[in-house]
Length: 327
Ligand code: SAM
Ligand code: SF4
Image (tube, rainbow, N blue to C red; front, side, top):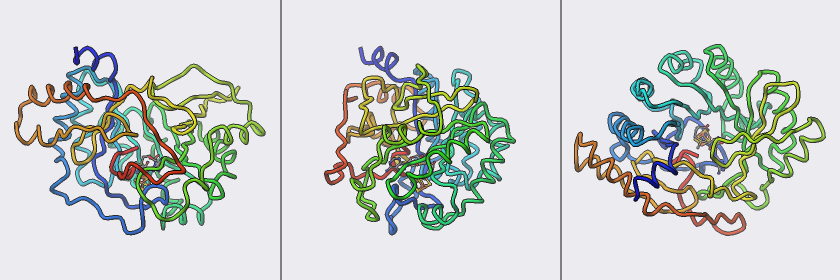
């Protein structure tokens, strides 16, 4: 039965609430990226309806992402309404941090439990180059604000590119330790054309990062898992966990417990495959009808694949960019 498979396998929904962003990271977007027309995005009410139906079906964790989620107008409404769902245990956010000085306290009081903040470098010039004009100090101030707001956990996320920031991995871990937050290193995924760099040349594996870190820190493997592609390590004597997200070097599909909703309302059953179900069509064809939407969600399990096939040396087979799928 599909409903059994759904409840066994899917506990985690990631929702991309917009494809737009105030930054243009070189690994995520091309310089002249065209964004979706606003009418094609799910409305805030539609996002809330989809989230509610997933929770009714047994999902206990929702992560809001983008594009830059805090860039979407009135987005606090989504956090507030999802934060009120009793069966939702974990409401989390992935953000680039630029708007956190404004939003951190309200997000916390809306019920957001944990935040992931992207931070690839601690050098202002590098930050400007990697994000095509972002200001590092704005993000550091955002992280300060998040720490003051008192979330259960904060994690920094760093995408590591060879010859761009791979020499900073130990400094980033030291920064995370100083702040008392977690950090994950992410291998670049070949999603969409970005035009700016050669992905095979910039590839820096989790194993290489781990070897670099081992020169500075003792990393002890832990069994902790989020059911996703991260593997975690602890450093004795500190609270910081160090994670590695390795879509190339470690296939993680067998333990994957998550599905993704794009900002246009397409439900993706796997980040590495094009299988999807158009939930926007279902929502708009059956206004206010949760039963029809839940049926479509459960039926989608019929096409959830068992594996993916990323290959960094090939042309991207997946033409979606990360700002569409939400990472
Ligand atoms: N704008 C927010 C941010 O940057 O955190 C949320 C959306 S962003 C698409 C989500 C995550 O995807 C970020 O941690 C980002 O670094 C990561 N990301 C973007 N493009 C990527 C790529 N090509 N490969 C691996 N990770 C990527
Ligand atoms: Fe924006 Fe996040 Fe993509 Fe960077 S990774 S361009 S901050 S959506």
